[in-house]
Image (cartoon, rainbow, N blue to C red; front, side, top):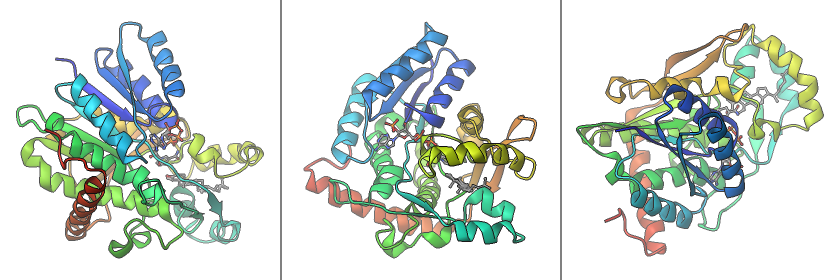
Length: 334
Ligand SMILES: NC(=O)C1=CN([C@@H]2O[C@H](COP(=O)(O)OP(=O)(O)OC[C@H]3O[C@@H](n4cnc5c(N)ncnc54)[C@H](OP(=O)(O)O)[C@@H]3O)[C@@H](O)[C@H]2O)C=CC1
Ligand SMILES: CC(C)CCC[C@@H](C)[C@H]1CC[C@H]2C3=C(CC[C@]12C)[C@@]1(C)CCC(=O)[C@@H](C)[C@@H]1CC3
């Protein structure tokens, strides 16, 4: 039986490159692109089919920042498929981002310049907003909408005979100090992106603890710095044009400047080829690119305590109960 693969945020950037690469790995995969914008999704599907005319590619409308949309998409997916082998939790936002040029300039002359340029530590702040569900938008999009999707799709994901794998797109911008268990939606701070990506790392660790015995595994990837709509949104386009040659030079100092969506998807494609049971729950898998453009995957231990991951998981379950009750929806599908 050909594997069924669902990719959220497949309409552009890393998600779209991932879909192309998955079909190149195995033209038989049954790909489902879960996207909020059906026009963009249809265009991506057409590109995929142009390269692989016999491929099985379907679309499902999914806006991870709307719980109603997540519930609707989950029941549609359950109607179409009997199981899911890989679920790529890739959709994400980094809205209204400001760069601290003061921190950038002083960082460039410090001993931590390479670290700063690969993690953006101390460089970025975001203005977040509230969704129609009453949640912080970055938290709901990057983490919670995906968490509800997983919970709703449990019957398709949990099978002892054939394990399934969740693959979260995290970031090297994920930072413990940006995250707080008492304000896990990051309503009070200005680093909602860092916080949400640290939250995905915690969620992945806790999901492994709770679901491995049911045949469901979870992993985290870091694509590196990739030029996509998300990054182009940080600075005006003429700035990026000026910076591009410098970015290629930075590649001589760090492997994390993967720059193209194709390169950024390296770790996701690598995980697709691994046995879920063989992966380490506490590792993060990084896409890396050499100055000459050669790709590889490197693993690094996450800065996560299992106890914190468990407390956070319990908070997510509480929030799930609360929001589903508000929507009059059952906790898990029949
Ligand atoms: N670019 C980078 O340097 C890095 C990116 N990442 C992560 O990679 C992931 C992909 O981002 P990237 O490819 O760079 O950026 P893009 O903006 O190109 O892609 C983001 C994707 O997520 C989708 N999306 C956004 N919000 C929602 C929503 N509410 N519901 C459904 N889909 C949504 C977008 O849809 P639409 O096309 O409709 O806008 C798009 O397909 C994100 O999680 C990002 O945080 C991590 C590290 C580095
Ligand atoms: C001299 C430099 C080329 C100037 C670029 C300054 C900044 C705009 C970039 C420096 C580090 C970059 C970075 C990201 C965005 C652009 C920078 C802040 C990310 C935050 C993009 C999204 C991610 O998830 C991270 C992994 C990136 C980390 C590095």
